[in-house]
Length: 233
Image (cartoon, rainbow, N blue to C red; front, side, top):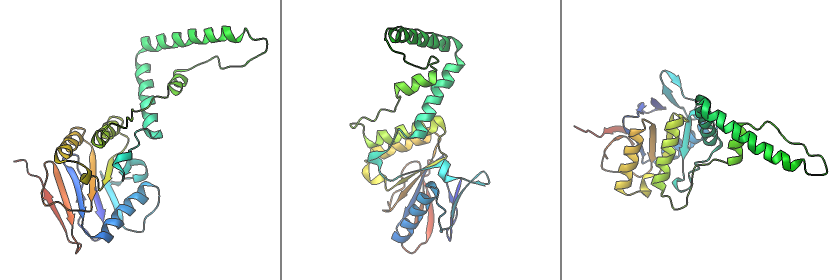
């Protein structure tokens, strides 16, 4: 995967490393982040920026996710919940015995309610054909969002969900690293690498070190760019 920004060298984005983009120039930082945000929200930015994957442009409105606030990551978006429910339905459909038992139990529960309905001295209408989809909606299945869960755990949960259900091709985190300890950063990096997901951390403040797993592109105050790579040899 390649990120192309006008006037700069192509930025390689890979799931083999943690991709870092450090931008010291304030105006350029704002331009890049604003452009990505606009693309993800369906706007056509004036700035020339595209992401190429396997010789075709990625539609970031469908395939990209940008996170500005790590403290309020929404793990229960419509897209996520739809995928979770569909996965449950697919699992049930693959096991005829479990599906049959579930439908039989639904039928028994429906008949019990119908018996009560018929005791009323006035007519009621109801849906006699309850499907597994209806049951899932009633259960309101959601990802747990305990307020005591750390931000690093939320990021890893998001990565797990996106990876498992292939929701997006790339996730962008903006100014996220400053909020974590070195150990937390290492654990987040390792988790992302193990899930084979392309992630780009866009940071305003540069670091002098190259952390384990990082592939770093730097754009300095004078708009010169350079690439640094963690070497595991």
